Length: 179
Image (tube, rainbow, N blue to C red; front, top):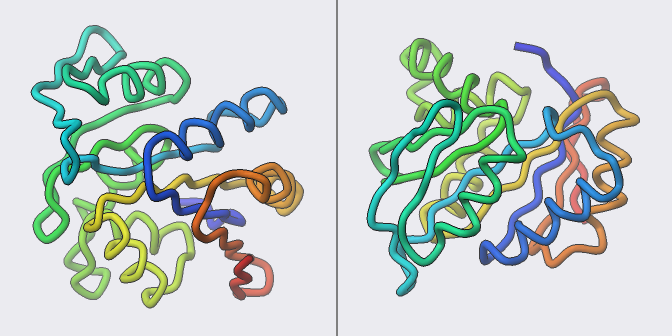
């Protein structure tokens, strides 16, 4: 896995994450460098089913419009049941990193498959535990990765979104900045 520079924005609801994705898309940010992960099972917007047609996942339920629209933008989508985190929907390159994490989770200090994927991106373990906690409470993680220039561009665009936190994990300096 490449250890790119990573921006992680946490959103309390799917509407904020969806708006941020649309802003990144309007600005011409490369969608292959974005991933989203979340669950929305603590509200009355329960998803009642999932299925794949070709390379697109379909979702039934009240949040189906969000996820159905996102699957067309992202490269790769999946539904995972992760012990301790529960049911998670994932879109973007993070899907491949999670699959790789499933194969090596035992080697990464007992992290979940999600944690192993984030660790593979160079995210520190203490941040991973916090991100997993946010997922458990139904929040959404929007992840942008790439060169320092890509990360700075994503950070500037996302700075104006409805995020709770916005963190930049710098790989060259192995540091994390939060705004």
